[in-house]
Length: 195
Image (cartoon, rainbow, N blue to C red; front, side):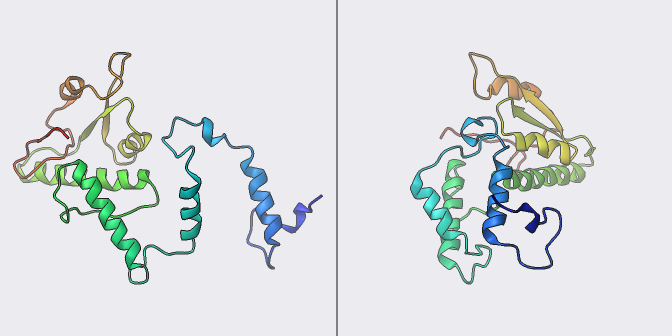
């Protein structure tokens, strides 16, 4: 039996706590959380290959923000950005981006950049810029609804149906107006090309 009194759960201890006791307490508390393999709602990684888990464990001691010390990791990040940019038809080597600790943070930064660009265009045209909206499919990651709540953006949700399990282009277009935040090129028009 372990003595939980040796580890304070609410304050930094005056002296070192035994590592095994702390690890056991954390594991015990996490037992009450949901089983990740049953969580299909948050798009989290519910299962992964052992090789991926081993790579993550091997990289835990690296501060990947320190690009001078870890140039190969920075180069891999740049190539990943190019791969993602390629999905949006952006030429390699011309993609701007950064890594974050999770997709939610990346979405917040991307949404904030789009919102700022929308606001600047509206200001330059002498138009109101206080009521932005964002059109989302009902199946969009929850981080986009959080973005709307945090940054005072009206979410306009396009529902799904049994016949339409992805974003319905017609439903999305019908919800767009002059206040819709969207990605666009210099002339303000949206250009979409098939992948």
